[in-house]
Length: 324
Ligand SMILES: C[C@H]1O[C@H](OP(=O)(O)OP(=O)(O)OC[C@H]2O[C@@H](n3cnc4c(=O)[nH]c(N)nc43)[C@H](O)[C@@H]2O)[C@@H](O)[C@@H](O)C1=O
Image 1: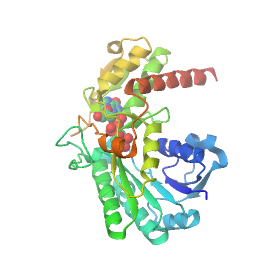
Image 2: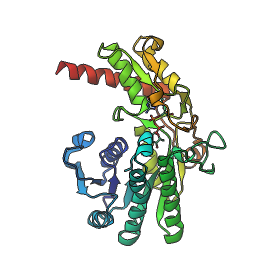
Image 3: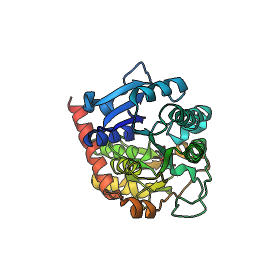
C-alpha cells in the first residue's frame, strides 16, 4: 500500500529535499503551507502535482487537526520553524509561538486525530548552547543561549513527553547546521559562497561578516533528510544527533570558498561587529556514533565537497541571472 507523509515547512530547504526523497520512494506527499499573498513555492515548483498542498498554520490548532484528518498520514515530519537565530532575539515571542508552541499544537493534533502516525521533530544543536562537552551526544545537557534554542528545547522535551505519556511514535533528530544551494543567504554558509561568487564575477567588491572564529559542524541538507526518513522506518522511536562529525571555522569556510574562485580572501573580507551575536555558542560539534551504529547513516558530502558544490551553483545562478 502507498505510504502517506505530511511535511510541515514544505517550502523550506529541508522540506523541499525531503519531499523529493519521499516522492522518489513512491510516497503520497502532503505539505502544510501557510497562506501568503505572494507565492513561496519556488523550491518545490519542479515537483508539480506530485506534492499536495494543504493550507494550515502551526499557530492554529484546528487547521492542524483538519490537515491531519484529511491527509491521514503514516508519517509526519515537522520541519517548520522560525529558524534564524538573530531574529529570535528581536521576535522572541513569535519564535516561541512557531518553534515551541507550534509543536505542542501539532503533537496534540496527532494524539487526537492520528495517534498511529510516526512523528519526526526537527530538533537543533542550538539546544546545547554552551555545552559541557564536545562533541555533543544524545546525552549532553541542554544549555540554550538564545530564544531559538530555548524554543527548540521545549519542543524537544514535549516530543519525548508525548512519546512517554501517550505511547506515540515520536522522535527528535538533533540536526547541526546544514546547507545547500536552496539555503537562504542570511545564513553564513550561503552568504559566503554567494559573496565569493559575486566578487569573482565583478558583481560585488567586499564581504562583511561577524565572528570568523565561530566553529560549526556543517552537513549537506540532502544527507540530513535521508537520516530523518530512516528514523521513521524503525520499530521503536529513538532520538539521534544528525551531524557531519567534522568541525570547521567560519574562517575555514571563507578560505575554501575564495580559494575555489582563485581569490585571496583577505583582500575582500572584513569583520563587521553588526554580525556578531550576543552570548553565542562558539563551538558546536556533533557525535554521529549512535546514528552511524544503529541506522548505518553517515553523510556522503564532506565540508570541502559542499563548499565546492555551493560556489559552483552560485557562480552558475548569478551568471544565468545576469544573462537573462
Ligand atoms: C543548527 C542551527 O543552524 C543554523 O543556525 P546558525 O548556526 O546560527 O547558522 P548561521 O549560518 O546563521 O551562523 C553560523 C555561524 O556563523 C557565524 N557568523 C559569522 N559571520 C556571520 C554572518 O555574517 N552571518 C551569519 N548568519 N552568521 C555569521 C554565526 O555567529 C554562527 O556562529 C540554523 O539552521 C538554525 O535554524 C539551526 O537550528
